[in-house]
Image (cartoon, rainbow, N blue to C red; front, side):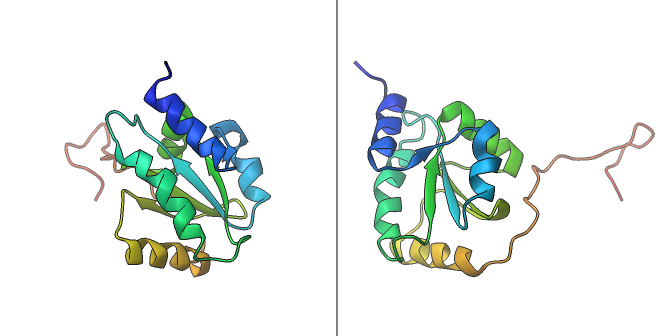
Length: 146
């Protein structure tokens, strides 16, 4: 009997999406005009990750066939990629343009909102990925940075 994580990954593979890990992400992203990376979490703990397997292909039907290239990451790769890009909420869709960070869609959204979010990512400028909020203090100070 397979586990829920294996079922999720099989469903993603069945869509024709490409599996990616943290080590291969940069080479795939730099060779792809508009890449979406589906970042996953434990589907038992976060059942909404299963919804993305249905939602993403439906949203993509709203765009010309070659607009986005979609890849997915297994749980360990999702955690590593999420850490790199400051992603804290799952499921998450990471948008990259020619290897540069564009943005994310974290969690689930209503239909019109998610279609609009995908469209926005096509025209959004690339930018520096956000970092995870960590207070910075010096050894000689009790307060954070001024």
